[in-house]
Image 1 (tube, helix red, strand yellow):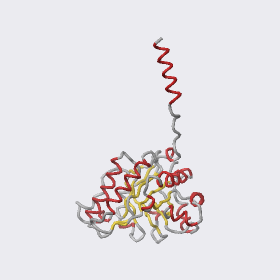
Image 2 (cartoon, one colour):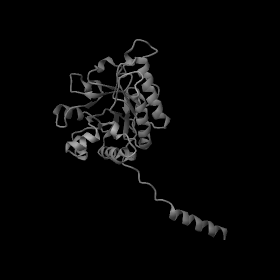
Image 3 (spheres, helix red, strand yellow):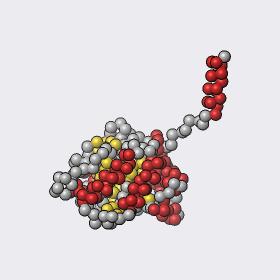
Image 4 (cartoon, helix red, strand yellow):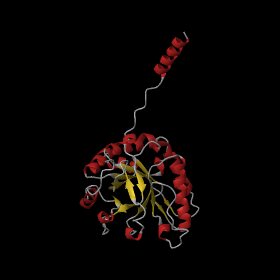
Length: 272
C-alpha cells in the first residue's frame, strides 16, 4: 500500500513539474579558452578570430539596417567574431535579456563569438566610472553564466592612470567575473603595464582565459605576443601583418570593405 501511495505521489510530482529547459543556442556553442599565447576551442584547436566592431544596439536600430541582416552578411563574409558595444542606456535588467542576448544567440547560431564591450573610457584615478563598470559586469554576469559564445570586454580604454593602478583595476574586473564562477574569455584592452621595465608592474594578470586587446594606434610588435594571447580590437587595415603574426583582429571598417573581408577569410571556424 505504501509503495502504491509513493508511486502515485511521484507521478503527481512529475506531472506538475516544469518541462526540461531547452538549451539556448549559445549553450550549444563550444567553450573557448586560452593556453599560452593561443585561444583554443573545445577540441584543443588553435583559433584565430577576425571580425568587426559593431555599434551599440541603439545605434543599429536607428540605422535602418536590421541587426539580423548585418550578422548574416558578416558571417557570409567569413567573420568569426563581432564586438558589440554596450552603452549606459543598455545596462538594465530588461535590455540585456530581451535585446542583447537575442543578438548573442543569433550570432552564435551563425558560428560567431560575441564580445560584449562596455563602451566606456576611464580617465581619472578616482573616476566613478570605475564603479559603474563594476556594476555593469555584475549585471552582465547574471546572463552569461551559461553562454560560452560570449566574451567579456569590461572597458574600452583607461587613460591618465598610473600603470600599477591600471593593472589593479583590470585585475579587479577579472576577479569580479571569476567570482561568479564564469570562465568565459575576458578581453583586457591596452595593458600598457606589460611594457613597463619594473618587474613588479609588468606581470600578466592573474587568472585563466584572458586575452589582451591592442588598439590600432599601438604597434602589436611591441607587445609580448609570443607569451600571451592578443587581439587587435580596432584594426584599421594598417601595415601590420596579422596573418604572419597569427593575431586575431576586429576591424572598424564598413561591412563592404574589401580589405576587411580579406582578413576575415583568414579566420578559423571557432567550433571546429
